[in-house]
Length: 425
Image (cartoon, rainbow, N blue to C red):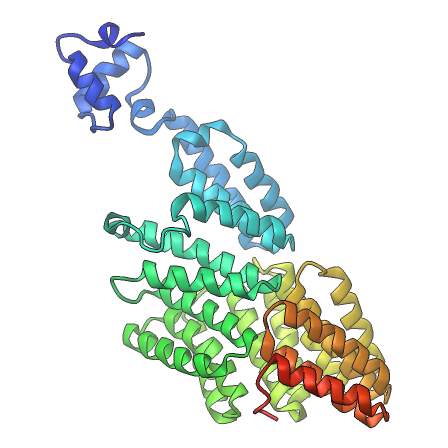
């Protein structure tokens, strides 16, 4: 049909041209057009008939529920079907929800490359990364801003897990800078905590200390459970690394107390597991307590939307508790299994290899321990986790020294010094 065919006493050709150019139609104009076109005004307003829109919303709700219940493969299939539906092309809100759901389901299913690809595409559509500053109008809709932050947060997290710490930090910093011009929000502090986790992996303790304090101050000003949980969570890890055991314990308790006001078993399980890891790392004598915490966390994660990577970390820390309890062979078997099962999660694989090295050391196999630890250090160096890489090379140097390989030990110490700061030694 031509514009002349559509025009009449109520709709001029000029007015129709304006509508095509994006001017909003009045309710009466929609009704007049619907009569001529033989469709519902809802189709002209929303792009979908009311019954089809309601059906898609129900399908999205079912996929969301499956993901929340930990049925990652089932949710992934449901989201994939929705994403392939051409009808979503006329409903950007539903399309974004389906795309983000599919990315999160892929992450939960352990397919990090797929999750990263979809999140990168989605973020490029909504907020191109080569545009450091979004136009002011981009922040008028708070819900849209929160949606963009949520996508960036998930991408920052996934990039960290595959070992691309530089990209993880870059995504986090760009989003953090440009999406929060109006002040702090719960989601903004959660993004900050995710960025802080990448800083922790890179061993940038000075930055970590200052940023953790900034996030905690902002969370206390907001006073919401979500903000306090996020800020105290990684703040506890920073304090533990600093050797402030009592402060780490206090922040951990505050994070768990904030969780009591929320219904998010995945986050509860991840937090409890992280606090247990702090115990294993900085208070190894408390390994029995840490093991009980991890067993509870494992149950919480198994019944939630936790990813395979979340469960992998929990299992790895349980293996470390097994080592501290005296079963080096059992811990080594578990660590090797985790590294094989989660080969794409390079950060987790590096941690698993370091645990294998610790089990070899516990069995006085110093040469083998140094070799495995050096491999892990090289992987961490490629990931730009330079603080951890430096420690791995220094520990391998000590093991080589113990078994009489003095020249190799000197080379390993030199490598550790070249890679990063050894002041903690």
